[in-house]
Length: 289
Ligand SMILES: NC(=O)c1ccc[n+]([C@@H]2O[C@H](COP(=O)([O-])OP(=O)(O)OC[C@H]3O[C@@H](n4cnc5c(N)ncnc54)[C@H](O)[C@@H]3O)[C@@H](O)[C@H]2O)c1
Image 1 (cartoon, rainbow, N blue to C red):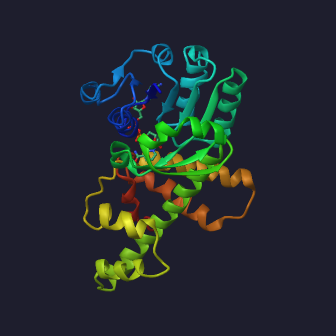
Image 2: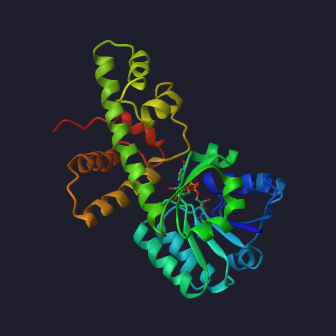
Image 3: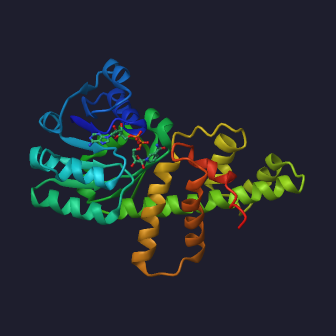
C-alpha cells in the first residue's frame, strides 16, 4: 500500500516517519515543511504538488491546520478531487469542523473516492512513535482497507460512527480537556495559596474520582515541572474550542459550564500568545474589572 501524507508539520512529519519505519512506501507534500532533511533520510519521497502525490498513492493522509485548508487541499482547482483516482481513500487526521467534513466526504463520494475522518491524540511524540490514538468516522470496509496504515500510525483506534463522527468526538474530547485544564489551574492556585504541596495533593486526586487526563498526564508532564513543551499550541487549541463552541450552538442544548470555560479560553488571548503551549491556560487569571 502506497501512502501519501499532505501536511508535514509537527504531526504529519511524525506520521510519515512512522509509516516509512513500518515499511510503507511514503510520498509527502508540504510546501513549507521544516522536516525535509529527516524525512528524505528516512526514505520519504517529497513532491512539489498534490497532483504528483495523488499519482503515486492508494491512501492519502491529511494533517493540516484547519478545515479551510483541508477544503482547499481537497476541493480546489489543483486539489485532490481533481487529481485522485477512483478507489483512493482520504484519511483526514486534522482536527476539523464536522460540517466541513461531511461536505468534503460527499464531494469525494460523488467521484468514487472514499473518505474517513481520523483525528488523533498524543501529540508529536506519539505521531513520531506510531502510537497515536485515533477516533475514526467512516465505513467499516474502509477502515479494514486502511488497517496497514492504522497499524503503522496508531497505538489505539476507536471507531465512533459514520463519517464526521470522528471529528465530532475529537471536539468533545478537546472541550473536556479545555474545561479540565481550567479546573486544574484553579485547584493548583488554591492549593498553593493554602500552603499545600501540590504534587502530593495531585497524587491524592489521581487516586480518586476527581482525576482526569489533565491531572494524570498534563500536570506531571508539562505543567508542574514548568516544561510547557507539549508541541500543541494555544492557536490549535483555540481553533478546536471555537469549533466546539459552534457545535454547542448548533445543538441548541444547554451547556453553561462549557460556555464559561470557552469564554475564558477566548479572553486569554489578550495575555497568552497563540504560539504558547496550550497548557499555559492553567496560569490564566482574569484581570480584575
Ligand atoms: N500538535 C499536536 O499536538 C496535535 C495533536 C492532535 C491533533 N493535532 C491536529 O493535527 C493537525 C496538524 O497539527 P500540527 O501540530 O502538525 O500543525 P503544524 O502547523 O505543525 O503543521 C501543519 C502543516 O500543514 C502545512 N500546510 C499548510 N497548508 C498546506 C497546504 N495547502 N498544503 C500542504 N501542506 C500545508 C504547513 O506547512 C505545516 O507544515 C491540526 O489540525 C491539529 O489541530 C495536533
